[in-house]
Length: 341
Image (tube, rainbow, N blue to C red; front, side, top):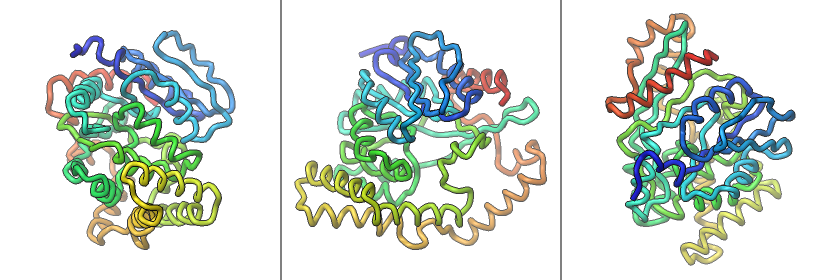
C-alpha cells in the first residue's frame, strides 16, 4: 500500500504534448510542478523552448521531427512508472482524482484504465466560470468480454485520451497507432480495451480550458458537424488508400488475433465493423435535430451575451461537490488567474 504523499512520484508519469504554445506550456509547468511525480514535456515546436525548467522531476524533450502520436509514443517508451497519463498543455489534472485512479487500478487488476468526471472553465475579466461535463460512459464498457467492450466504446464516440493507463497499455496503444495521428482518438477508444476494462470514478478528474489558443488544440477535427464530417471522410480515405492505413489495419488485426485467438478473416471482419460500420459510417456524427437547435442557440447567446449572463443558462458553478477536490480546484484557480492567458 501507499500514502498520498508518495503515491504520484512512485506510480505516475504525466506526458504533456505541446507545439508552439510557450505561454500555455508555461502555465502547465507551473501547475504540475506541485505534483510529486515524473513529468515529460513532448515538444514538437521548431525551436527549443527557452523556459527555465528547474524542477528535477520534469524532463523536456525537443522532438521537432515527430508528429503528435509519434512523440507520445517516444515518451511512453521512457516511462518507468507503473502508470502514465497524458495531459494537454491547456488542461489541469486533479491530484486527488489521479490518486483515486491509481488506488482503483491497484485494487482492480482486470481494469487497464480509469478516469473520473470532467469540468470545463472559462476565464473572463478575472473571473473563472466552470461547469460539470456529466458523462456516464463507464456503464457501457465494463463487460468481461473484449469484443463487447470495444464495440460499446466505439459506439460512444468520446475521446479517452487523457485517462490514466497502465503504462504498458499506453505504450502498446501508441505502438498500434504508429504515425497515424489523425486516428489517435479512435485508436484510444478501442486498443486499451483489449487489455482490460475501463472505469469512470465518481470524482473530479480534469479541468479543461474552453479557450482555443491555436488550431493545434483541436487537432484539426473541425468546429462543427460539417467540418467534422469532412475530417472523418479524409481519415477514412487515408485508412483505405494509403500504406499508412494498411499498416495500421495490420497492427490492429494482429493484436486482435493475438489476444482473442481469432482467425485472420475474423480479425479483418472485426476491424471493418469497428472502423467502417461504427466510426466512419455515413452520418455517424449527425446529431438529432433538437440537439442541433439547442447547440446553435447556445452559440448565438455565447457570441452576443457576456459570460456572466450565460452562467444562468449553462448552470456554471464549482465543478464538483467534494471537499478534497475543492482544494484541487482552488489550486487550479490560482494558476489560471496567475497566468491570465
